[in-house]
Image 1 (tube, rainbow, N blue to C red):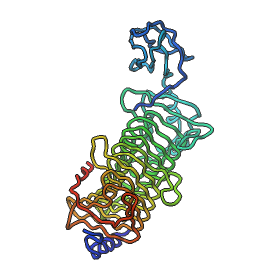
Image 2 (cartoon, helix red, strand yellow):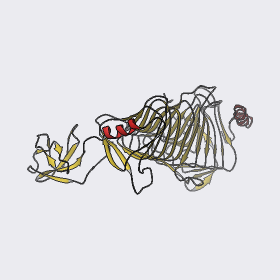
Image 3 (tube, one colour):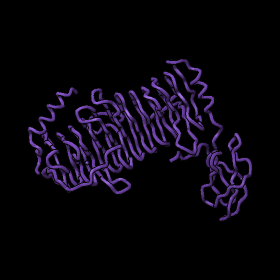
Image 4 (spheres, helix red, strand yellow):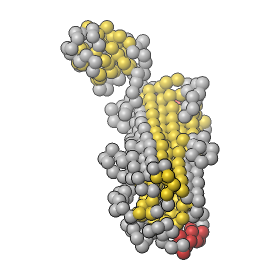
Length: 431
């Protein structure tokens, strides 16, 4: 969208008046089926747990770390965990030797710009695979939907470790893989395309700095941050499903005001209003975007169904945002007891159309402007059973324009949509 178009939108906001209505784990095993170690112990006493596992999975070596009945017992670094039963210690996981040298040799043997194929099956890593040249890495199958064959790579490490680490300003495509215990990290300004990849556990699904990033059909579960990215160029997330993470998506625009980024986010299997699963139960927030300013960074969120989680469903800071055909439902306070807003603007300009904001613990839509103006035009949007439907926390600089077709429901009855000023605590600016 050109700058003069944005200026026209802002002019419409303020020409209409500042307020048209009256007056924001580790992967749990087992790697293999439980196997009896047949190591003697007595009920309610310490149980000697084996230190390692033989190739067939049965435990070997009677070292002496202990556990008690019905407690997990783990020995750091050797890949073994067990549970002390009534008369023996049972192995619940057995990690084979690392496959990192084998997979790294495949990468090293591929010429720059060529196709690297990972075989089907489960592989374990004791550290990251390193990619430092342009490559297309393709597994036998993976992603949000079940496939007949899969390539699964599991990271076993005492510290957060990505499964794949990209070094340098290179172009890399990664597809048809499942990753457990670690995702993908860029340590340069790489251009990355990810297609049909699932990440379960670890620090993040995608993290680091990127010149450009395109993600298609990706699921990320049980990480600290589903995606934590610093962008110098454009980004697109299409067909994503992030659930059970501490944070869903955090995007920082590191580009210049004169050459800003454009970000597109859509849900999985998008089809009409709320048709695409997008975010589910991310504890501290679902989609956070920080730009360089509302006349530069553009964010487009469409066909995205955000269900549950804490903090804020969508937080836009210093961006020009468009929210279309998106539903945000049941946003609770985060685990620290703060916020609970469906959509929140923080020094941002936006439009919201054909959307539904429902059951927010604090407010359906909140607008804050501690530094400069925030403004949003809302049309054909339904607000259902939010504690407060519309909240603005600055008088002169906040514009909430009624674009028409909006409906507010409270206690099962349609009520007038009114913006309130309730002295809500603003979200902290993203660093």
